[in-house]
Length: 570
Image (cartoon, rainbow, N blue to C red):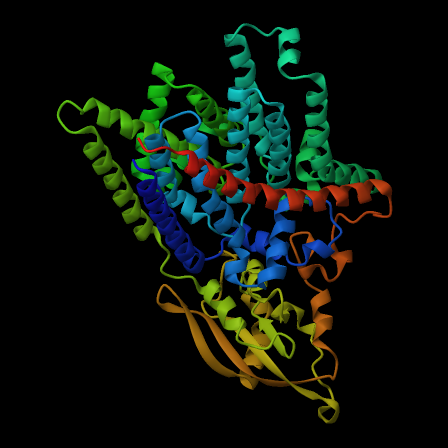
């Protein structure tokens, strides 16, 4: 393939991938965890937090950088997943190109571009950001194995640390690579310490360890200071040190249990991979069997190990679909391997290149059909956020029906002055009309009576009187539909309020352990004294990690562009 043709083809793949992901951004209803991961980052840079109770901190810091640049919208809330998801496509090409042919790398990237599972998680979640850093770590690790250059040892350490700061599952992939590294040394002549140190001098090993510890220090310092002051730690350390878990009971902390593996495996295969990527996943299983039995290709078994070991761990501890999106690039690689194998076996009867192209197009067409079939036709909360953005953020009071799941209306209103109907005692309704101020008020009603809580989790009678009173004083306007039926109803008008600033309402909201928009930091359940040198060191590491994450993501683009220039005409 000529370089010009390659660039045109890869450009077409990226354009198709971008279109599919942009469409997903605008047509995917926020799910429970996404509500959390889009609300918490808002003003996170001002939070003075080194980490959080349930998640590593870097994603929240990066998301707030995006909010500050782009403003708050559905697009900006999901931008990081779009950004890192798109970057993962050329990065997968680089990874595969280090261990396989140009065709194999190109097909792998095309499969990832059209992966319905990968596309479905272009949402406000750290899954695709973590996937990018896992891929980048694999790229540097393979370069380390092939060249032995110590700079790649340092880059592996840095990337592993940044990935851990986004999602702790990065450590499982790094551990898998470590096992493969030991295996590769053994295969090439044994585990002799002197030869190992000759290849990787002690000073570089120490430097890489220090680099890793420095960049993950925010998590370590956070847990140390929190434990010293309150006897608490985050979820992972709480479980590891067997501390009291009662404070985190509502989060459903996963237990490592081998007995749940069969059920989780069946659920993962049927509801996640086959549901979104039936053709690609089926081919990937064949590709894995080929690698396992034939053991062909330098370092291809590394990707098999990086699939099986983390998969075993995750299947024994979680069934959340977002935690399996890390495997989409590896599945794409093995699916490409299977397509090439099938085409080569049919070569005596068909021209190899023609058959290969036909099979790839069939797979992409099947996946595109699945993507279109799985697109959500109803996304009321996305539409609600768009409707909210039409009103002035400073002079409008929003009141949300408490029968709407708190994450949904918080996602839509987090940068506005708002109250829910269970919090109307905080709204400064005027007692004396003479000293009142007419204030634009928007009430968002849950028409079906339960908008996301689930049966039996909300008592409609608690706010029935308040809702009835509000509706009498406001005018019904737009209905936002869900599956063709009214879901949210927007009422608007003017109510008489005391002449106070509405900003006072911003200090009463919290969502999953933390204040909304970080206005009232005392609402955080993990506050500790930050006036010490350790906390300051952690803040330095955090800010450097933000810079490093941005630089490395841009560096991956540079490496891909440079690699494309080196590709010669075959």
